[in-house]
Length: 441
Image 1 (cartoon, rainbow, N blue to C red):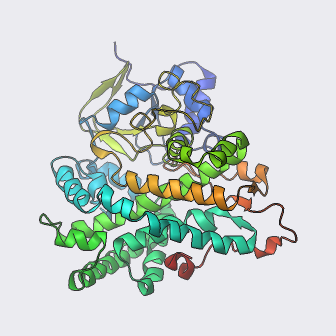
Image 2 (spheres, rainbow, N blue to C red; image 1 turned 90 degrees about the horizontal axis):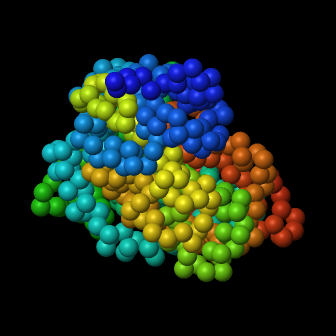
Image 3 (cartoon, rainbow, N blue to C red; image 1 turned 60 degrees about the vertical axis):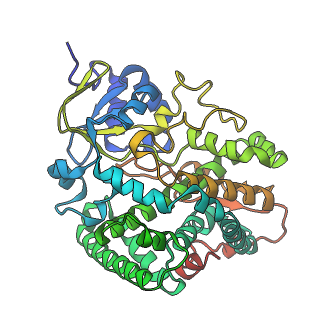
């Protein structure tokens, strides 16, 4: 007989783990890997009871996760589960969320095809010199401070500046648009900020509409301009939603991945030494970093459009489904010594799930890979002796909260040149100004 409830039965240890994961307990958010290991072994398809009140099934093994990411029974179109959407996101349907990420074929197929036509590997590779220039300019500012919060001073400014250039957002307009993005992203899962969120999303929507209109009137060599001139085109509301999701998904994931990667190189100096000695290993090391400590801890929500059975668990129709990417990427049934960081590990691209799998495989994966490669290359070359200012403080800086969407650091204080005399901690630039972020400096 199928097990309808995958929560633990009579095992206090497992019960505590399921409870911690359900509510996003601090001990789980700080170090989820031992809990994921227990779930893979004892409850690989586990029913959670998260704060939003909608039963959610968490999938933790690699083979199940890979299958679930492309299983048509698990829908991404939240319009098909509007009550569930409202329970998670609020009492209104957000036009910004009506995008390629939250859609199913055939609409998803059309949106993705059009976006890919303007977001080609060739365009991404052509950005290498400019991304390198941006990274070096930001690090030049960091060098003057000596001790920096790497997240605020480098990890976030780099992808933000790159995305602004990709979309063709004019320099003078960037502070206003970035401020609206910031308000929206910090309010997404905070029920006390529903009114603030709705107002900010409306302002952002109008501002992106103006950007589209201006770009249509003045074509340029940008991703957005290419979309507007493509043979098959998106409607303006689809363009707005597409710009939103590319910016939201494209800056946080990359920023947190930069932080995760640098922290783990500091914790594993032998691995950092290998990369300094042989920079040619860095592209492969990026794949290992994505596997070992990816910035996407769990997939975005799916819901069961029909009843689905995985292993011995039946997932009822209408339930939410999440895939634990961080758990799947450390599954010993798929990876040898998965809890060890090895920058020489081979054969990872196409096997780890850091960019997803199947229909919703990350559209921006080539750009993210390039940014990560450049970020690590520049840091290791410019600051070969960088060290954590306070490693114990950093160990406790992992993102907190009930939703384990991202795995990343709130801050990462780094002494860039430990041998430099007279470093003044008060010179730490902290969070860069919007003008600094907008200019890529």
